[in-house]
Image 1 (cartoon, rainbow, N blue to C red):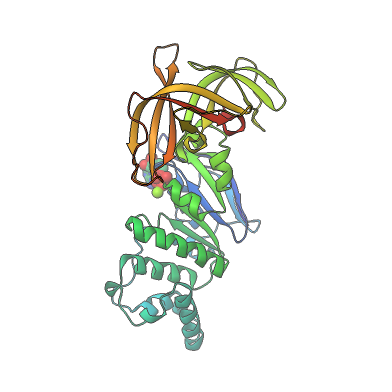
Image 2 (cartoon, protein in one colour; image 1 turned 90 degrees about the horizontal axis):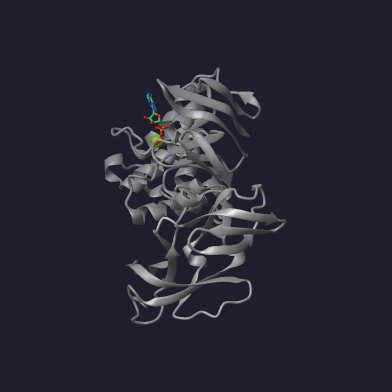
Length: 365
Ligand SMILES: Nc1ncnc2c1ncn2[C@@H]1O[C@H](COP(=O)(O)OP(=O)(O)O)[C@@H](O)[C@H]1O
Ligand SMILES: [Mg+2]
């Protein structure tokens, strides 16, 4: 439904967007995720029409939007702080765009009542914005953006001003709302947890370029590159090089750990000798005083280097060897603190063993 085709945008000598291409399906909850300054808002503003790309095209249903001013595009935007009119009630705020469009009084009333149901605030119709909480105000802002049924709703970090608890509640409501109204959402966030929780698909952006576009589970388990592996969740990155790639198996050498055989990447072709990194999620690693590895598991001995108590889990940083520069090779593993009264199973300096299934490690360039 929405196609971004080779869009570039430069501010002075800063390349804010560099040949960005992506496609969003109708009804999709699509997220642009990346660190601050990577170009997310710039891309959203280009879709909304507040800014014009230097080159490339933006198409909705196959037709270019570029010649249309923002108000002619069937697109609405919700920002982090969406200014509601303070002197208008909630119902009047929501009705505003419908009145501008010249709808009849009864049609307006019906639509406002329906959208207030959708955002679960039917009792607030007669209230003024200052009588609402931050989360409620943001829901009204979203209701106002949805009420004249845009093809596309753009949301730029709409929850980032809310505290953690409210944010989680609003995330659940956004998922349900998007399902109910069936409108395509393009959502911007720098928060990887939020992106994983909300989205059908995510485009990870880095320095004005797309790093990877995939479903949340694929991004998490099969990152295409180090940037994505590192940005999404916690990840061990073990540096090494390719010894040889044979079909589904690749033999690699990890500096400080030696040779091991891992699953080949389904898409990346490596040549013998290429540098690579093995990405390994901490929760895939088994950690114990002594582990008895299965035949398809990789096994190492080490010492606890550091621990980090997080309440539900403890993170253990395990030193498993030294690399050629004389630095410790550290691997991060997690253990759930589910035994009663046990906050920490190992202390710094304890000898431990770790292992992980061969298929758990994922190779990137
Ligand atoms: N109008 C502008 N003039 C100059 N530089 C800009 C302008 N808009 C954005 N930038 C720069 O472009 C880069 C990307 O900005 P932005 O798209 O806002 O990033 P994000 O939303 O991912 O945090 C930033 O370095 C920002 O300073
Ligand atoms: Mg931004």
